[in-house]
Image (cartoon, rainbow, N blue to C red):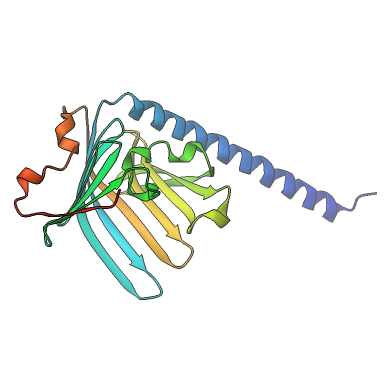
Length: 216
């Protein structure tokens, strides 16, 4: 005969299992809704603060930036660094050095590609709903992502904070295995601003004397 203790233990395990499934389902429903909404947008424009926290070195730095996205094309500005991509070629320009590096977009650094930010959770992650939090007075869903193959990643957790009313990403935290953490705080978000293809291509003519380094 089972003891009262073993029954209680079994019930606790069952409750935690069911709770975990509910968390996963709730998170998936929210993320699916976010994906569906953003896929309907022709373009996305956002201003953000990017914070790097290196726990080991006791360093914390914050920079302001902006991003424009249209299909597979994007443009990022972070202080004096600008990144242009037409989906095939990526240009990284340093205003301080007046130097541009040219790479194939598929050169292996997916971390640079913001167009994947609204679909990244669809493959390769387990997702768990945590609870609601307030960010600058706005109620947000807090969802955790853990990679399904953690040995292949240099981070262990991605935290998503999604504005409940607007169904927009408000904050993203990437927690590294070595104590290097990255935080993106979205300050503004606009959809369907018209852009031309040239907005996502670096123009040497607009940067006289630029030093070109072609890595392709």
